Image (cartoon, rainbow, N blue to C red; front, top):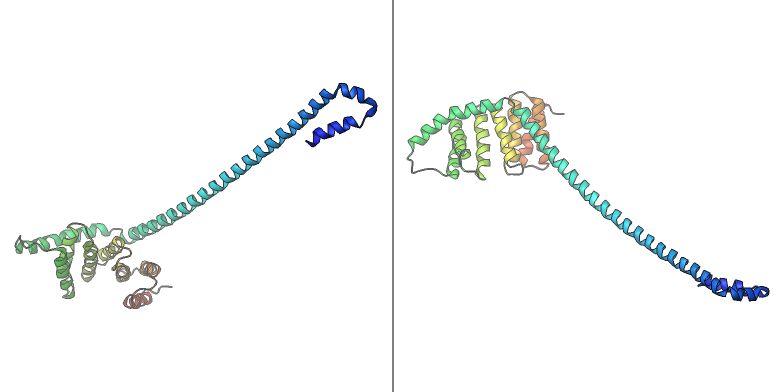
Length: 252
C-alpha cells in the first residue's frame, strides 16, 4: 500500500508535466499495483520459508529424540552382552577340562544310583522334595556318594526350581569327595542357573573355596571379587567366610 501511494505522490509532485502524467496515469497505476503485488508475493514466500524452517527444526528435534533412545538401547544391550561374555569367560576359564571328568563322575555314580533305585519298590517313586531331603541328610552324615546320587536324580527329572537346589547339593557332594575341579564347575553352574537366587552367594563362595583347594589363588580371588561385586551386603556367614578365603588366597 505504501509503495502504491508513493507512486501517486511522485506523480503529483511534478505539476509541469501533469498533462503527460494524466496520459500515463493508467500505466503508472498498473506499475504501482504490480509492485505492490510483488511485495505481497515476497511476503507470502517469506512466510512459507519460515513455516518450512519450523517444520525442519521440529523434524530435527524428533530425530534427535529417536537417536537418544537408540543410544540408550545400544548401551543397555552392550552392558548385558558384556556381562554375559564375562560370565562365559569365567566359566570357560575355570571349567576347561572339567566336563569330561564331570561326565565320568556322573557315569561312575549311575550304577550306584541304579542299584539303590532297584532295591526300592517301583511304586514308591520319590518326589524331588524327598530326594533333596534324603540327599541333604546324607550330606550331613558325610555320605557324599548318596548325596550326589540324590542330586543327580533330581537333575535328570523334569525341569523346575528344585533343580537349582539339586545343582548346589551336587556341588557340595563333589567337594566332599575332594573332586574340586568338578565341584568348582558345579558350584558355578548353580550360580548361573539362578544368579539372584538364595544359593547364588554361597555358590560363588564355593567356587572360591574349591579353587583355593586346587591352589589357584588368582582365580579364587576373581571369584571373591565377583561375589563382592554381585552381593555387596551378603549374610554375615558369607561375609566372614569371604574374608577368611581372601586371607588364604592373599588377594590384593
